[in-house]
Length: 116
Figure (tube, rainbow, N blue to C red):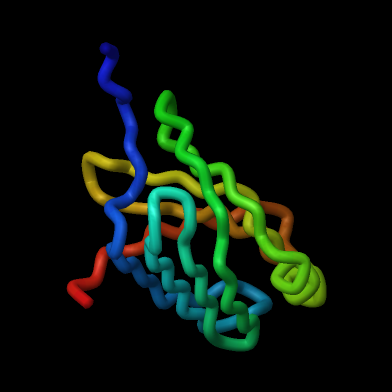
């Protein structure tokens, strides 16, 4: 059997990043992996979100397909901001999120694993 090149983040792992995003300001992104297909996404700051997100790992490239709740999509829309895509690098144990604020280009966020 062929071994997949990429696998998803370990269950029960937790990642965070504090970042200043133009227009929106200081934000804290937290991602907690609840299972091999569900994660909890928490965004704190002016933009405030708490969502359980279903995700799937593309084993060929490490990209994560995900579906945000309608409530989260509505909150993001108020700020004219989108989460465009997500990925996970199993080599560096780093999830990344592409955020599109109300600007001409996206911002790549790389979350760091926490010990909690």
